[in-house]
Length: 314
Ligand SMILES: O=C(O)CCC(=O)C(=O)O
Ligand SMILES: [Fe+2]
Image (cartoon, rainbow, N blue to C red; front, side):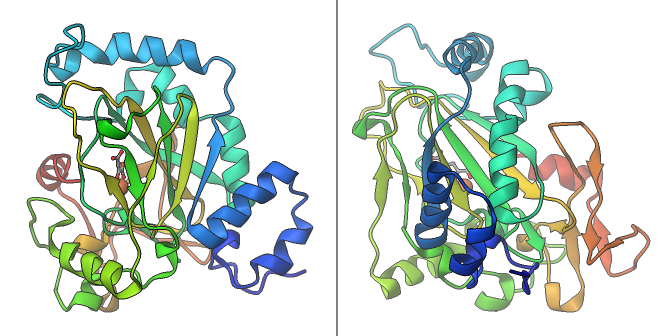
């Protein structure tokens, strides 16, 4: 069957039930596809026989950088840095998890475009972040060609601030500046999520959903769709760890930008310079087969100063 909507990820297309018959999915891949379509997330066992050894090496390598007394079982683990961004640059195991070929092939099948990883985050504890959608940070045109893959690096206790999500929220309106009546282009924010919290809470109230937590086993992974509301629950026991890695993926042949600092209708896009972790090559923004050039006046690339500032907000 021809896909009349190439501008939608296959798993988010209204034609999904008819289209998936042609993909040659295994039973497990079809379960993952169905879960993403219906719930906006899917859980699977991370496909890497060497994962346990990688996890141990990552903990050894990154552990000292968090400023946390991991060896003292009674110490507060939530003090200090709670995340390291883009550790893949110096850690081959973080990179291998991000660039896992089975995951890349799976995402490519599910979305109908080749996937590439562009950012990693490594957490030793829960983030305790409120419900949010990553789409204010990283979006694409056409929209929704972004996803996160969260990997549990230990069994997660209910008291360790597990990941939570609102099932089905990927189908809710995408909260953009236009939706909440603000201008974003050229602005500055302490956190790129700040302007949108009330809107996300209003949507949760309106749709009447509650948070579902993911009590993951070590080695389990969860894919979230671009617009799925998710966050980190309150950590009841500050002595616990909750080691995890999140890799964010984009898909080929899109425009890549930060909606929090864009006004799309005016052509004012805060474009992202993205490169694929898997092959190190840049992925310039492309719109329906045409590469965007930097000199277009309405388009804006971040200055170095803005980039440095944003590292702490993304
Ligand atoms: O691990 C968590 O608590 C959430 C992480 C998250 O929201 C993200 O990386 O996008
Ligand atoms: Fe997130």
